[in-house]
Amino acid sequence: MARTPRTPNSPIDTPAKRAKLAPRRNPYWTNVAGGRGGVSLGYRKAEKGPGAWVAKLALNGKRLEERLGTADDAGADADTFSFSQGVTRAMTWARERLSALEAQQEDGRSGDPTVGTAIETYIAARLARSKRRGDDAASRLRLHALSDKTFAATPLRRLTATAILKWRKGLGATAAADGEVEGAEEKAPKRRGRPPTSILAPASVNRLLNDVRAALNGAAELHRRELPGHVAAEIKVGTRAIADATETRHQILTDADVRSVVEAAFSIDPNGDFGRLVLLLAATGARFSQIAKATVADVQVQSGRIMVTPAQKGRSARIKPKIAVPVGDDVLERLVPALNGRKGHEPLLERWRHKQTTPTHWEPVARGAWTSAAEMTRPWKPALKVAGVPEDTDPYALRHSSIVRALRANVPVRIVAALHDTSTAMIEKHYSSHILDVTEELARRALVPLAPVPASKLKVVS
Image 1 (cartoon, one colour):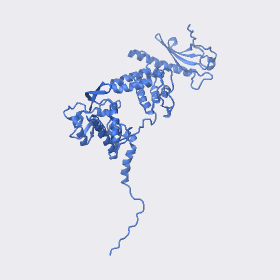
Image 2 (tube, one colour):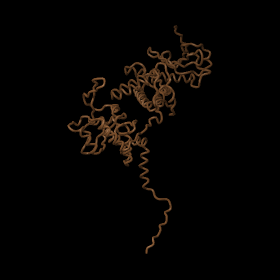
Image 3 (cartoon, one colour):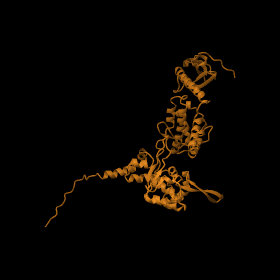
Image 4 (cartoon, helix red, strand yellow):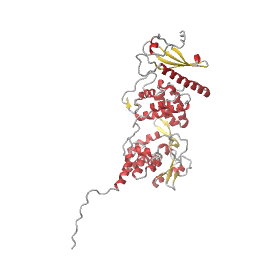
């Protein structure tokens, strides 16, 4: 197709002048800065409806063009802008693209960073830190984010909260900028270029948004020289969590139920491996990941305590000290088989690894440390059945029960939070009703009778 000759300083500054122009694919250009080799604003006349503003940057033999938006022609919607606004946006766009080109030349890169490249970089970083956790995040992001080709191909410099919210609607549950949830009961719409995703629960959406937010923020920080300043705000608004979606049902077990679960765990495993795992989860209230890292040296029998490794949370590079959690003599006694004859650096808790020899037979081959909470799934169900507790009880109930047990014993909230490697804010948010139980009991001691005291009767003394 023959190239349309450029019209110097085309009459595009008013809607009336633009209405007289003939529709054509190539824009009508006008200089903005720098002459032929600088910045130009173009107007692309449509066959029907309003036209569009286009910016162009010509520099060192390179030519960049990008659509800026819709012109304020007759009959256009409210989200349009005028010629003077187009000039301003063209200059802003040109400065951003110039900074991007300079940054790319210095870093030896080519091409614009996109949502997809940001997520892939994030996945690589997660895998480098932890393969298991990285695989979990990678599968979640590739299934629900990278599979949306339109969203993944969006350049970061053009990323808006609206684009993020549009992608979120395909997840089955989404929150608008004001926090309202919409579309949770609707079937996920089909989109061109991606398979339909299953409807996600609000808590699952929030977990996915945490990863997407971290990926986009990391890319925005890395490419800060070449991205508009408002990108960070767009990411913050677009990835805002669904309100109250993370509220989970806290299963609180009685002391008798906890003892029953521990005994059942020992009864179904003659080696005691599963029993010792459940015992420590119940005694310390720690997370599985923390208990799985415990070593033989972490059990301080003389002091009656276990040193629990803090969870890997947050982005702080500071190494946190281990947490000294007191345990009873009965707990230490049941840990003796895991301590005798073993070196201090060895994992405290181990289990047998099995190899399938026949379709119905598995043979134990070696012992190794517990690595994933999913390894509890198979023995946990039988243990619940033996203990006689509800079959939907989650292992995390042992942690909830430990926190509530401490609060009911009038242990200060700050100490409860420290022993369980969490914050006082999280304790107050999720266990406030149990904190009120304690304060109510303390306040009850200060009650005084407010009703009139009946007159005492005199006794007749002979």
